[in-house]
Length: 384
Image (cartoon, rainbow, N blue to C red; front, side, top):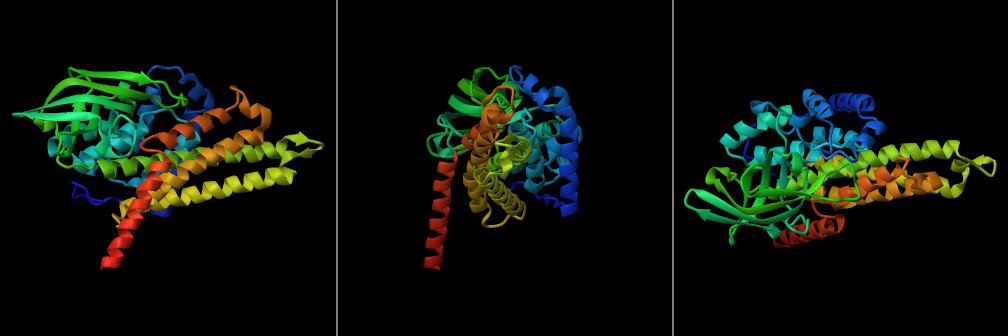
């Protein structure tokens, strides 16, 4: 995986990762209980500014930003640790959009001027960013961008629509993919620019906010163009973070399902003693742990700039997110009737994992991409 930065990614030790995990869980246990999450379900902003500031103070928003620009200079390995805890606590925040997608795009492909302007602000929470990379159908195929780019002198004109853009309604800067008819380019524009219109998109998951981004004759200086088209790298980092979020949600709802199975008595016995329930919970555990391994492997490969990083990311994107949906769905069944009610949290986990599996290309698309990578590798091996 290539990067425009010469800075070496800092690698945390296992003990440091465990401490980051403990710190994240403790903070979110205290500041993001389910009651707080539910209070934001109908909030038009979709996140808690106080919690966002606390996340910035802990350095989470700048994990992927270079130290030279106020970030931690960390990698995807640290990012997935935080993303997993955010999923476990159902946290509503622009973390994926700003700390992962926008920050990665600018850190990997931005010009020095763009990096100096935006990365410090994204890292300290003063600004929020997002990325519009998936086109009108929400697919991970960046070539399907719904935005056209026309170069006129020293200016660039943008027209089109991008759907399913996370947190665009609160973003200050948007990195979007556009085509000039021959090649794709990334452009960083301000949400307040003339001709930019953001429309909310209703979804089943109220802990995330998606938007349609409309560009009607948006004219920006050609300095808004990023130096490199890093769309594929950014999308893969995004789906790995989404998969980590799903793993966190799956692990948390599995824990709750196990506890419920110990407490709920039917026919004079805890339901966890029934073979069918035990088998279901065991299968949920296997799915969760396998998904966790897939996510950790992909993150470590990216941080090591390994040649198989893209392949491992596609495995995480296709397997781990499907596994999270399956675990969350089975947790509803394990809880029985109470699991179907609005008052119980089961449906929040199920909806979050379902939307997480659809964003940035669904698992079926990523299985197609994985197959293409493996076939290409096999052809290269045969020809060598």
